[in-house]
Length: 179
Image 1 (spheres, one colour):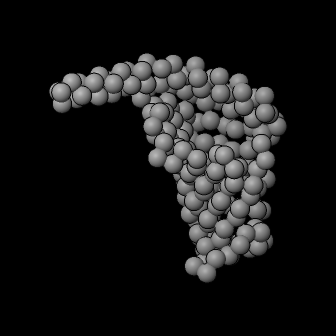
Image 2 (tube, rainbow, N blue to C red):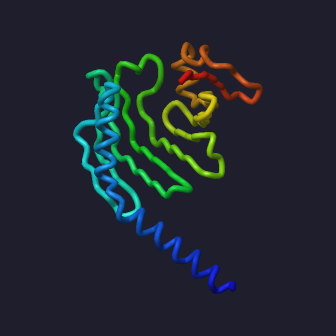
């Protein structure tokens, strides 16, 4: 009996791994790119490659309403069903936002898991400091907690005034989106 259960789980895991490996990730990426274009978000100059269990995108330029907004050195997308992750590294924001926030971001990691299916979680590290975000999928509530760097504290005080300072020195921001 135990052997049959083990065999069932082994076959199920093997089937899921093969399904993930042979999924046409590049085609799905271009479908997503087409859907983003309808929202005036265009991704240009990227190199897309399927790495078996993940999708890698290098040297992407993001344009929002025909205005260059960001350059991203690398994006890795891992979709496993139970746990999904998108990692962005070496991001340079457009100089337009330099008066509000620092323009260099080392990394952003977005994750979604069936352990907490109602929240999309993200963390970011950059010249601004460390930020942790949580987005409620059902209620549309975005919560951000920012631990600012010295550069952010000294040069971007006006931006920090829009956030709520906690007793621990972190800054928080909450916003509700209506769908």
